[in-house]
Amino acid sequence: MTRLDPIRGGEPALVLSEFPVTRRWPARHPDRLQLYSFPTPNGRKVAIALEELGLPYEAHRVSLSDADVKSPEFLSLNPNNKIPAIIDPNGPDGRPLGLFESGAILIYLAEKTGRLLGTTRAQRYEVLQWLMFQMGGVGPMFGQLGYFYKYAGSEIADPRPRDRYIAEARRLLDVLETALEGRDWIAGDYSIADIAIAPWLKGLEYYGALDAVGWAERPNVVAYLDRFLARPAVQRALDIPHATDAAA
View 1 (cartoon, one colour):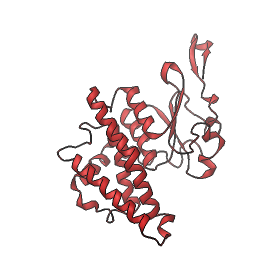
View 2 (cartoon, one colour; view 1 turned 135 degrees about the vertical axis):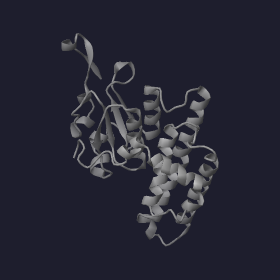
View 3 (cartoon, one colour; view 1 turned 45 degrees about the horizontal axis):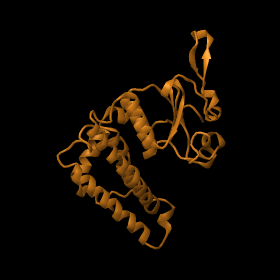
View 4 (cartoon, one colour; view 1 turned 90 degrees about the vertical axis):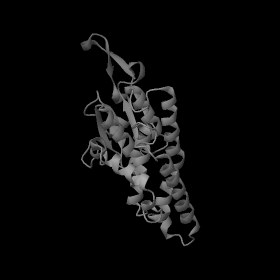
C-alpha cells in the first residue's frame, strides 16, 4: 500500500486511496490516522485513546445503519460490519495498516506510542487481562442488557432474557467493585483497560438501567466512572465523530 514519491526523494508516499473505504469517506488529511466510528461505547474507546495519546487523526462518522456499516466500502475495511475501524498511514514498516476490533486497535495504539499498557511485562499482562474482561464480558453482556432493557427486546413478554442480563451485569459490576478497592484505575495506572471498560459503564445510564443493576450500591465503581469522565481527553472524545465530521 505504499509507493515511492519522487518529489520527496524516494520516501514512501501514503496512498490511502488504495483503501476502498476512502472512496465513500475521503481523507482530507491523508497523513493522519483515519478513524471510522460512531459515538457508542465501542466507538468511544478509540476516540478516547487517540485523544489521550495525542495522535493526529481524522474522524469519519460511520452510522450504524446498513447503508454505512454494510456498504461495500466499509466492509472492505471491516468484514464484520462493526465500528470502529482505523487506517494508520504510518503503520508498521512504514506501510499503511487497516485494523478493526476495538480491543485490537487499543493494543495497537498503546504499542505504537509506548503508553497506556504498563511499564513492565507484568503490568502489561494485568492491563491485557482487564481489557479481555471487557471484551469478553462487560461489552457483550451490557450490550445484551441494553437490547432487552431499552431496545426491541424490551417488548418481549418473557422476563427471563432481561433478568438474565440484569443479573450478569450486576455480577460484573461486583467484580469491578472488588477490584477497584484502594485503586483509582483497574490495573493500577491509567491504561487502555480503563478506556475499554468505562464507556460501557456510562452506557448503563443511556440504557436507563442504573437502578436495575444497583448502580448506587457500588461506590468504588461510581467514583471510578466519575474520575474517568473528568479527564479532559475523555470529555473531548465522548461525541467523536461529530455529526459534521468528514463523511456524510
